[in-house]
Length: 186
Image (tube, rainbow, N blue to C red; front, side, top):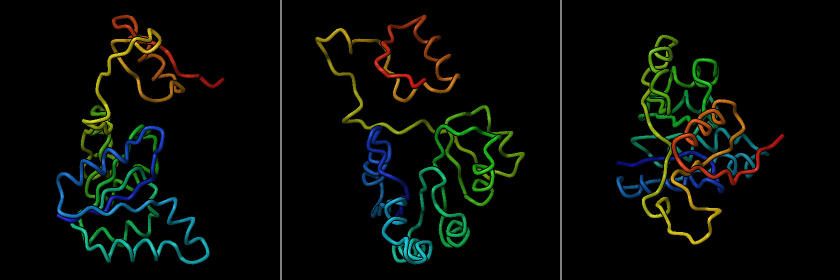
């Protein structure tokens, strides 16, 4: 199977790097296209055409898109040529007009909230699929530490800026040792 993976580098979380490594272990050929970089490099011309040409030249069986950064007209053009899937983490579900719009033409939409599948289907999203955020078998594992600051039962990766995340961390902390090492913006 040949895969084109469209995304951004996500240097802090390295999620796209982990996804790329996992895809490489499973597929015959994986091509990563950095969408923001492509846009920056080809701002002076029709970067959407450049992006479409890159995808077409790779002749993929599957185009996996991280978030909805792909220009909608490009997604429309490739939808009949290959399987299209969007990995859409941390979305607002049915309130996300962008998710609904893209999910109506993508073959699959991977989201991390099972409870929204029926609602999304009723709004025209073809195939919502439950998927957790990516992690890596080599990098994401417990590491012994001598510093009490880092020792805990549970790790939360992300920013505690949304109310539902803060409530989740408070609930987890009631049962497990959860250290707060993040800086919460005001």
